[in-house]
Image 1 (cartoon, helix red, strand yellow):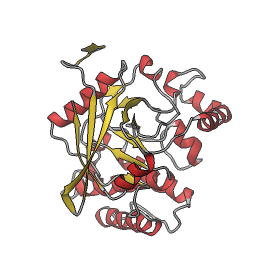
Image 2 (tube, helix red, strand yellow):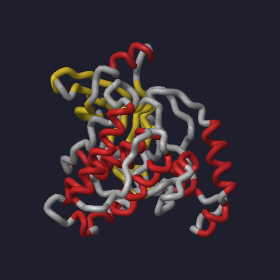
Image 3 (cartoon, helix red, strand yellow):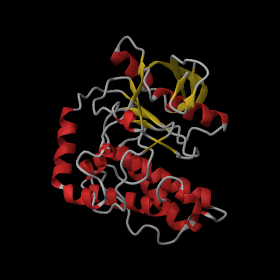
Image 4 (spheres, helix red, strand yellow):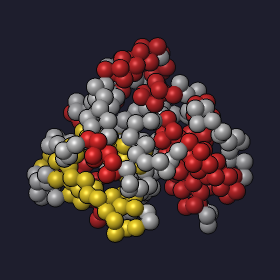
Length: 298
């Protein structure tokens, strides 16, 4: 099929996510999804196939959010602080504080700002000399762990996040793509994931972040996606985003974003829907797994 500049030689209908246990890779569970056909879907499939062709690994395959008991409050705090210590060991003085209360939003915002500062937007981290050292990849990994754990701490909804950090972020949404964005969430829905680096309108509205370095809307897309295990009609979120924008119109205008700028579109594009019979039974089954083993599209 051909959609825009993306040519896919066959029509794909199904997606499978194989879960496993970190303690036993042979104990697996397959999640089956029906793909949601749209003008954007071939573009996303292109990114998935490209990542697999490059043999890019799934980054942080342990990214299960609020689905099992592993990431309790103390574990999350310890994980954050251990990675902060590791960053300061590899690059002394990178962080000047740690976190002791998971609800301390100001410190979460501060920690995220340090990630933004050193990582930069998209792939600009590649030219940052602090990573051009023998332990540069290790430092980047610790920073990435901090970034993703902050998002985990800020979001209490159950979900699985699948990302490929090594795939270059080169593709941008078109105006037609933004028409597919939604703030609503379906249980078992698989959605695009924010692929830029910075804070988009949704994050600013949620975090009240005064530490951030860059406002970066949903501009680029990648293969990265999330599977949500909850329902939300999006009404309250949409109202909150609109209120935040209306209260900060001058800020956005000074950055070059007008009131009807499609780049300020919030939400995500739905890519697929999980096939299941019983929600509670599914949640019980998923809760015993803690590793994303593979992604397969047919």
